Length: 235
Ligand code: UDP
Image 1: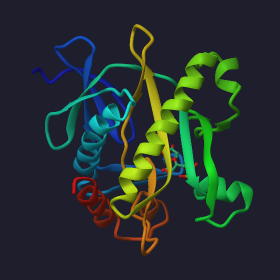
Image 2: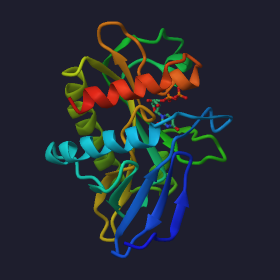
Image 3: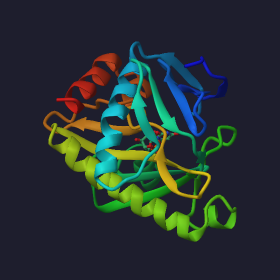
Image 4: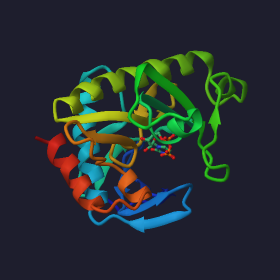
């Protein structure tokens, strides 16, 4: 395979074209950012860990009825995925109050929610991914009403599968961010990564945070936490 042309470089990955139309290669980086890239750093080994976690979870999610862009892991830090055009809406599902949700509502982190909460953020680095209402994506033409309903149901299905998956590995899925894309024919697929960068995972027994909050909040042991998640996910 040719190296392929760099199509896009994000904060945590690079996306390259391939010889196969409709297929792109993702290379996961060790770079980490937080607070809208005001905080920057490197988490040693993160690219390989997040690649491996995502490559493990996506086939299981497909089996669980959540179609996604993943095709194949091709190296420690790379995977092939179907090329989609990303819908500029982050869908966040919360099972437990934490982070910006807890802050906004004045809640203690760790409060269980009676039902999953869905939130939407507009994907814009410039604006810092602002929270938007559920009518905004439709009003702005980012997604049709039908598509938004599909994003909701796919996000809830993925959350429900992952809650059980992680719980069986002594991990509490606190919240998670999903991104979706469209194939040229309009089919919607779950895209991007699923990793400790994009969800909160707490050890069920100790409550210890095993996700990017260790980096965001300078808690130390970041690499160890990511390695722990990989080990439990693949166990
Ligand atoms: N999240 C993410 N990318 C973002 C913002 C949030 O992956 O740009 C994830 C985050 O890791 C957490 C969930 O979405 O699992 C909810 O994040 P929250 O809104 O609480 O924001 P934060 O407190 O991380 O700023």
